[in-house]
Length: 135
Image 1 (cartoon, rainbow, N blue to C red):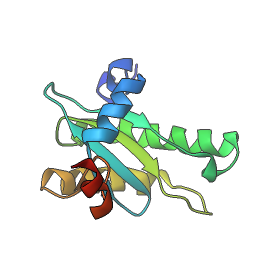
Image 2: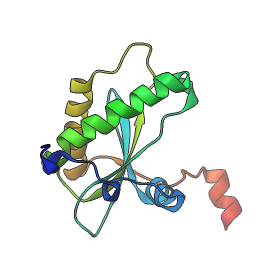
Image 3: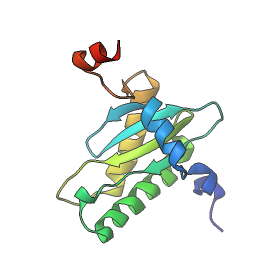
Image 4: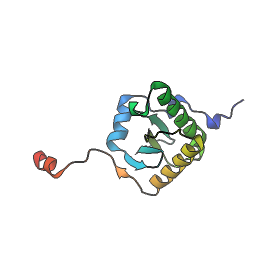
């Protein structure tokens, strides 16, 4: 029987549109070599994952393969990952294949950097012209 510590239940997933909007709007971004992580600090314990793989990555078969790799990397590392976050993972575009080991290391590295205060705050960046128009 599988160890339930490494499961990936529905409660560990971002599913609804409003959950994605909250993370994109209020979360912090941190960029790695294989992915960008957008993280929003939660009150309740645990990590939840959402995926965003654009059509720039290729056909549906390739996009689904990338999603499966990202889910598996998260599932395997979830017990060891620090913090209480809603996460959205955005893979960087590349020609070659993604390696599971690389994605697992990247999850750990990015979340440790995030916990130590790294990352850029979310929301839209506004230019000086936009700020003047808002006044």
